[in-house]
Image 1: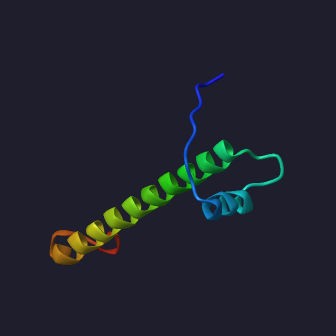
Image 2 (image 1 turned 120 degrees about the vertical axis):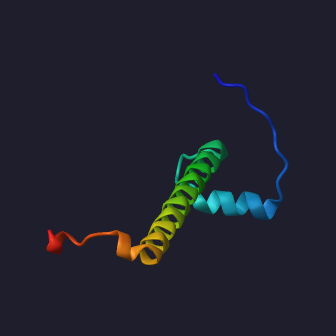
Length: 71
């Protein structure tokens, strides 16, 4: 079994975690779920940033690209 530790949280935070979890979930599972959702959020933000940079690059260098319709 993995090593465990104790963390101090407020009762308000505990109650929030409890409301996020499902029947049978322990706090570790709820926290892991939140961590994974946060990672996914950061990943999507990064993709959005890259897409915006690509759009800006294309708009600034539009004359360097050839439309497929012109081929």
